[in-house]
Image (tube, rainbow over all chains, first blue to last red; front, side):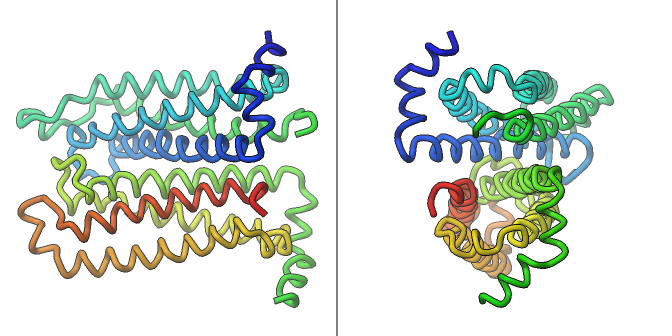
Amino acid sequence: MLEWLENTAVARMVQESMWGYPIVLSSHAVGMAILVGLALMINFRVLGLASKVPLTALKTMFRIAWVGLVINVVSGTMLFVANADAFFESTPFWLKISLLVIAVTLLMMLSRRIPDADESAQDYVPTPQVRWIAFLSSLAFFGVIVFGRLIAYWDWKDF
Amino acid sequence: MDGILTWMRDSALAVMIVNNIWVFPTLETLHFIGLILLMGSLLVIDLRFMGFAPRIPLHAVLGFLPLSLLGFAINLTTGILFLFSDPYHYYDNLSFRLKMLTVLLAGLNAVWFKLSLHLETPAFESSGNPPMRVRFIAGLSLLLWTSVIVFGRMIPYLK
């Protein structure tokens, strides 16, 4: 299965074309900045930063954050198939993916709890439960970054 | 230039970074966190000044600016430490030079943004709709900082 993945056309393109790998890697960094950057800004606002920004109006930014998520699922899958067996055996990789699923789930929970922007919701104040979701989502995203970086150092063979 | 590069390479700081295996991955992780804070806050601010999320008051969105400055400070510090660890490698690297040039342009663009705000704030504060020039500067800011991320990721490949 892993061997088959590494021989697919997408994997070959990332492995062999001179610019394939750096371009996919750059997209992954830009997607990270969009997804994690906007997730943290929304979370920090829930926790009290920039309190003059109405949360219901900031909610629009979730749409851009999901664009970042799509960029990174696509670029991340391409990086994975190019080196499937090494990623499959990497502990920090699986820790990263687990934390990513948790972080994104918490972010989706948050987006459902913040009301849409209309006149009645102008002075929405997040409940303690919503604050906990924002705090834990930030923590999980922080872990995603740490373990993502560690993939390149922890038992990584010839990379 | 050679004198400075040699001094950096032989400094106690460089020896410390190179000889402790955990220092470099820690600096890289911090550099990513700084990138996320800088880019996340600028996405919210610049998208708003481009006309997106019009329900956010323009003066309020600047509440995210301290995070841009914090992210930049983290990345300036960790970036200088990278430079100490291998000064000749970075100095000769095309992608690194392009990245530094783009950081400089982004800085000048930020000054232009600040000047434009002072000149034009009264005119658009009431309408909530930034003038064309301010929208252009905000879009240019996102383009330049995205290029900074891409050139940074390209350092090992575009030499």
